[in-house]
Every structure is written in C-alpha cells, then in structure tokens.
Image (cartoon, rainbow, N blue to C red; front, side, top):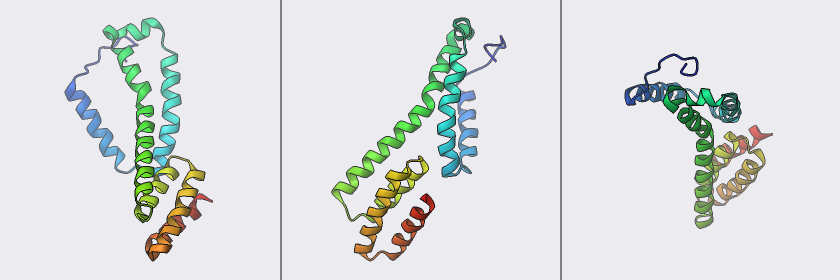
Length: 150
C-alpha cells in the first residue's frame, strides 16, 4: 500500500490489533500448518523484498524499508526460537536422561519442524527411557509419533 502511494497509518494501536488478530488465528494452527508456513513465508517475504526498488524501500519516509527488514527476519526469528528450545531440551536430557516427557516434547518439536530423522532418534531414545521407567502411556504415545514419521 505504501509502495503504491497510499497513506497507511501505523502506530502501536494498529500493531496491537494486528497482533491480537494474529494470535486469535494462531489458536487453530496445526503443527503441520506451522511448519509449512515457516517454510513458505521466509522465501515469499524474501522474494517480495527482493522485488522492491530503492524508491519503493524509501516510500513512506523509509517505513517500507523498516517493515521489509522486520518481515524478512520474522520467519528466521521463529526458526531461531525453535533452535533455542531444542538446545534447551538437549541440555535437559543430558542432565536428566530419564525425563521421559523431555524426549516426547523434543520429538514433537522436531517432527513439526520437518526434521524427521532427528525426531526419530529422539523418540527412539524416549521410548527406551519410558520402557525403563515403566511409563507405558508415554511409551505408547511416542511409538505413535514414531509411526507417524514413517
């Protein structure tokens, strides 16, 4: 809109309303949907920004440039959050190798991120841990997650 020469009002109220709508819409997002969105959005935003001219980026007193920078980093920020969480799960499981829920949560996160081989490895370790702990319920849940990967 700004690039097309239309005036756009951007202030904290507008951003808060957009974030509220985004949060409401996100309540129904599946893991598969989130994974696909992250894969798609990074390339789509990069393509859009790459197509902007210097004049386009300067539109709106430089607001287009700033919004392009924010948008281009958005998907990467989410990917970084996933990597941070996975690193924390790895630390947790090193310190507490019998914490069955940690394997399950890490496996789900890896699966949702499309990292099937890593998910398979962590779920197999989790199944072994659940078996040692006699936690049949967690063992069956992780076996189901593992079967879904195949």
